[in-house]
Image (tube, rainbow, N blue to C red; front, side, top):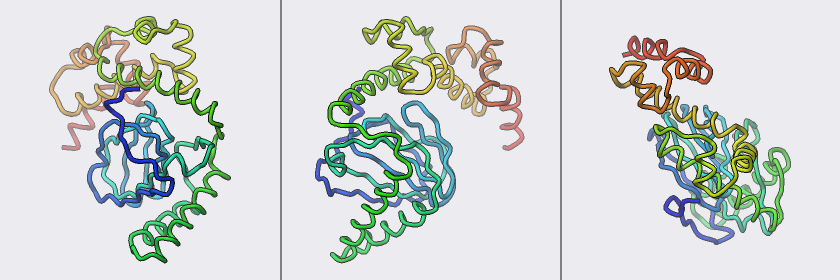
Length: 267
């Protein structure tokens, strides 16, 4: 895992960072930490990228970034609440939550927690902390994927570290010719083990992820430049313009030409 992207938050088990962010484009750079981070979208819409998965969020949606996951804010304009929980909050167990949660109980209780914590007086803060425990108990009962003991958590983090390095490398070198054999050798793994590990963590193959990154870059260029579709294809690492068009349509459900035309008429 890239230590340069590490955010040192602290290790107080009752250190709850609860912040409200106004319309700011939902733009924050790629980073990771041991804390569990929970976002509730109050207004607008945005995109979160977490361990390579892109999630479209709307008002009322709750997104969970699990401990050790590489994440960043994508496009969008929204008002959202952010809650950070120390790994010590859960004792000796690591809880892995679902990524996207749509639950009226959560969307109702989360703002109440924020209001109590913002009031600042001791009774309100204590009541707010109690509400956080109610919120997390509900999430664990209804939206946890699995619980990991100390040893299992260590193995889980080791997997994330390896794949986070690969994700960072792909995002920084997407325009270059890349194969699973090359990626595996860079990170001192056999190709078979690398492919299996990547799919286990990311729920998609390394090539599928690479094509998604390249397609996202291409979409931006289609909307913001006058480069030809062939030029964009090669610039983003596709060696064949026809393959680029097929891949783009599979991921974006429209052709590169359609994206460009829609962008042109929306100006």
